[in-house]
Image 1 (cartoon, rainbow, N blue to C red):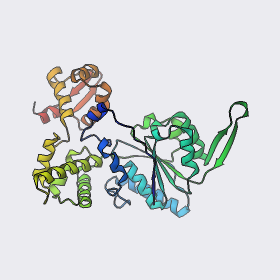
Image 2 (image 1 turned 45 degrees about the vertical axis):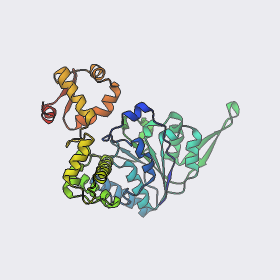
Image 3 (image 1 turned 180 degrees about the vertical axis):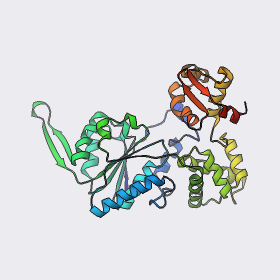
Length: 348
């Protein structure tokens, strides 16, 4: 199974680079080149750790498609970043024995981008579109007949002489991935036959993932140490692997590369200011500002952002979700409120 990639990466501004965090589930700038190296990605459903219900559902659909000799129904994956949407798409292609053409919505800005992708398809191939909620209207309108009727409608000429030419397409599977399913238009969403959410991983599965990655990159780590990394990665394999690499760097410099234990994990992640709950300096600064300046809340987002010198949208989309997820923050009609659990964790 071959993977054809056409992902475009825009240059990052200094301001955006400054905000990149170790526990951010999105790909960091330094990790973009790593996406070309798939050596750490599982290749089969058996190798993919976690997401048991999802694997069972997809496994049945793949076996049924193979038995009928048909293309798999169009798939829509949604959920937070870093949970394995791209990896799962590649596994499906591997199980089907076909290519997976990987791209992203920002890379499909012009009609010819879509046309070039579709006209080169082979029967039953997969097209994976990341951030599919960012497709523009023209791209969506080209994909509607392609997904529903396996037909590409091209406009030839302009004005009164314009004609519509239809090109038949082979059976194929469109796989869309998004972190914002509500932002996908209804006509686009309705064309997916299978829609599945990827869930956060538990600490035990993440421990297994860390152990697997350690074996692949040649690092010796104890079960207890890998469990500690699993507890600090916010339920996200991408963050778990990132933390493991930072711990490996620390152990290398300290000359402790025989076996990574809990002590090395604690020292390495303390250096990066990631605590045992997975909170980093930005999270703690946010919570302490609420406690110290506003007596724990309630307080509106705007004054809180002003006090922290941050953009309100950044706080809402980057900092708050994890704090809400673990019960350290509440959103009320009157504003944000720090919970007792958060105060206990911060020992205030």
